[in-house]
Image: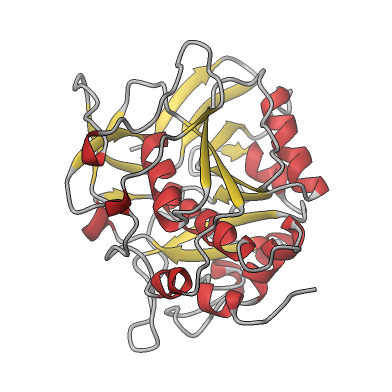
Length: 328
């Protein structure tokens, strides 16, 4: 399922690049442990900090790669980072999923924010509604990571988008290296900077190409291992022939059999969580350096039929990224 909003001539649609089993006209459930998922003002569209998660959530889950728990045991839990999740929190579309062993229904943004927060339980997680184009992203005095699990689409040949304050702030952060900007690659089984089956381009993808702290993330069918290399998920966008994109592209497993959630929307928060975890070890590193650390330490031997034109730099490896004493 793709969530789309028609916005006239210039921008054809805002599209959340993840899908699951949708549910309509159901109240939002209480968060795990009886706490609300977030305190979000859908009228004012303000940045909000997600409320503290119950301690019971801070444990390894089957959908996480095994090296996440190893990083936590070493004390790297993202405690120096803020992850800003820009997504659909206020819309009416709800999805069924399961990140905690309990099947629940949430908005797209609540799922991506919960995933990032569970991977980096020490991080501060902030939410911003992706349709509020007049409100720029806030850069904090902590290590900033931004998760973008959506695309901004228009038909090829249409006038280029006139970016609002939100999109301009995202693009500036990726250009100036003030945040690691993690972008879901998309679910059209096409090249990141190419044309979709229906003749559209994700202009947010296109304008992040070449920005030094931006990372595109595609989806493998599951976490790959040496014994069982993982194929690219059939829906996932791929790196393509653009060498700049190849240098910015990673893949991670999205096992919908476990979570009930599919799409590169749920690949991106994994990498956002990894970036937050890295920042708690490499405390003097810049967003540019940590983005490059994730890319340069990716694995190719856990991927079925690795090809740089498909998988970019390979499958993100938290263990390899954390291995050095310091990075330059």
